[in-house]
Image 1 (cartoon, rainbow, N blue to C red):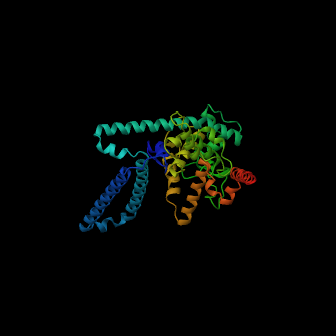
Image 2 (image 1 turned 45 degrees about the vertical axis):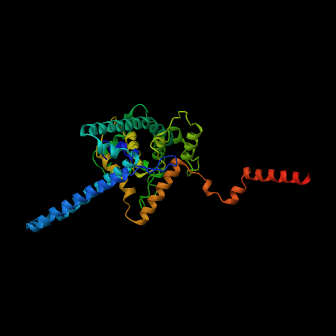
Image 3 (image 1 turned 90 degrees about the vertical axis):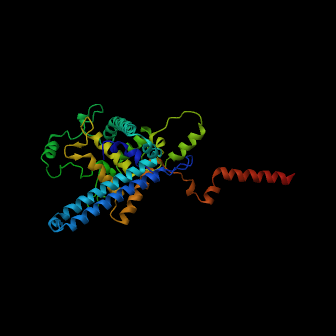
Amino acid sequence: MSHTEDSLSHIKDRQYHDDDLEQPSSEPLQAQLAFVQARQRRRIAELEEKLVTLESGRAAKESKNDRRYNIEDEETSLEQDRLQAGYVTLMGTLPWFYKKSSDMDYDDYVHMLKMLRQGADSARGDDTSKLKALVSEWVNRELKPDPLIDMDDKHTCGFINDGVRAGIRDCTEGYIVMDLSFPAYLYEKYTTNSDNLEEGLFKGKILLQSYKAVFTSPSSAKDVEGDGDGGDIIENNRCTKKAFSGVKVKKHVAQIIKMEKVTPRSIAYIACQVRFALSSVTSWQSIDGDFNYVQFWKTIVDFFERPPSQDARRRVNKLLEWWTRKVFGRSRRDDLTDDARANLSVNVLTRQRARIDDASFDSD
């Protein structure tokens, strides 16, 4: 997660479909094709280099390094896959980007990237400021720490207990805090099952509240109970747009970026934001002691995007569906049977009025 990637991830990583939008252009597809072709050319060059190495008789001397090279190749390939996924999604989000950047002079292109970085940094800063007070409020209300967290003083956050601090400093077992551990706030009811660490993972209430506060407004974060049984936010937004056509209506982030589904990278982004809000660090930095936010972000993304099996993939898809219901709600119209629709009061009244009219006509 680069300096820009960590703040653009919630914008870049999303999938959407909107009936009111024009059909997307072929530019994102062209961009994806160009990226794949460049990758193929790079791979061909690597293979040619290995062939030259074999022909020159150096293969035997370098055999002891094959394992190290294979590991490096895997890491490079994984990083390239992450970048490609982000690039393709960015092209879908900003369909004008590929053509415009292709036609630009170098200086103009650099300036455009600079402006995008500034916008990304500004968005991340806004989200950080918003969650600073909200997360403290939620922790105080739900977990009731002693002493309570001061919303205006981050020094009351983090590991303020001297014994805990010493354990972390000395890397005592049970007190190791780094990006290779999933924090409790990621888990449902903030507890883990040591025999099944996937159980309840990424269902933490504060994580969900933070997501909704950033993408669908702080007020929506109050409603996180149930299983997405509230109003369908996407459909409500469309109705509002039609009802107030020509009238300026304030939009939330998900509307602005046309986001209709929760995506892995947006979850990873919020997880990083919540971790920062819970820490005592006052300014953003990629590494906080032994905790590396970049690696933390990658670990969460890989959990969703690189499941080890088909069963794991199904569990991931089910989890993402759960997130989408929780954040955006769902419409139950399509779930209703014909009999259920027929028994709704509006339809019942229509039949009753028709019978009354028929009876009146027959009597005349």
